[in-house]
Length: 98
Length: 334
Image (cartoon, rainbow over all chains, first blue to last red; front, top):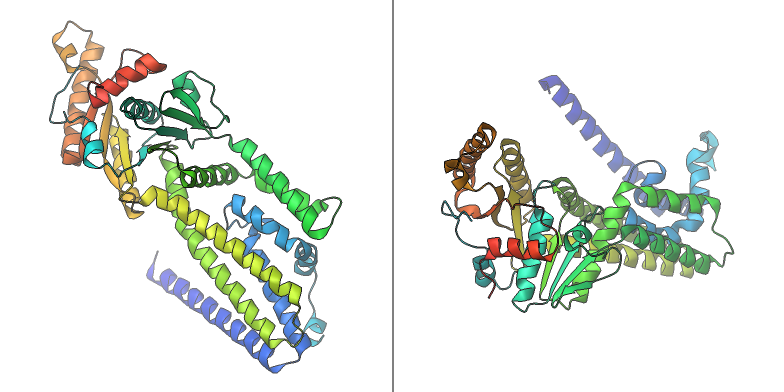
């Protein structure tokens, strides 16, 4: 790829990395300094992230060999219903204030 | 039988020189003789009094064809004394596995029926092409861990899939590390929150254990493929341009994944003495072509060529032909 394109790619990567880091730090900060309720909410998102990673093929992104991801299935059964609802729900400002 | 060039070593040497190499694999493009060599090697070793299991990790297994016995999905079947052959019925294994998972879910949550969303996930996962292969490789771990044989001969799938699996093994390893790390972090959160639900902790422990179990299985199956002490990997090729090119490429990739390559075996070599006989132009031309490519192979792979095996006068199916092939590869079986 051309020099400019390469630079663009690197900048994008750098941005994503920094964005990820910032989000993580934000979550950590919130968990430590805010109320228990908020910490629970944050944890809820992490749980969903976990599901995304292991059951990514619900969204078409296979990660684990299917034989093994099936093994994880029983443990995330209760979360699947809530997860789908959350992921597909529309988000608005009141979520941040809730 | 032709014993030209310097490749007159029979493969016997490899086995006497390296008695620890108990996991034998033949790799290479489809149709070049991997199954034939697997069967013949198994035959030879069995005749020498070793307990051998030759099994197929190819969903389109051809051990049934070559041994002329239906062994599909029947577990290890004795062909001749000491020689056991197995074709894994991946489909059956996946179905049983799905049932296990369903039952576990019903038990864990005290349900009478599997929720629709979950059921559709279970069905969809089983339909994935990678499901069959991962099921087979998991079965291979069981087979090897169980033990009971002196030699294990894997009839590997054609090149592409084996490489895919090897590369995926290291990717999955990294991912599972990431996931377990993430899981550990989530447990950190629990310490922050005042309300700690005990059941939740135990459940997370179980998930972590599952992930570690999976990591262990994946590592075991890929280590079988890469253990330098215990694995002998033979590449099968023929004296044709495209085959040589593809073999070179594959060899590079395999060395990247640290698969210990024992050497190359040239198959389907037409008897050179035919040249001196009164044969049609077509055959003369093929022989010249072969000679050319044998030279190319010699230059390209040199000392790594272990043997050249002649083209048989008919299909290698059935024990008599397998014995003939074994003699061509290993010399007289004493």
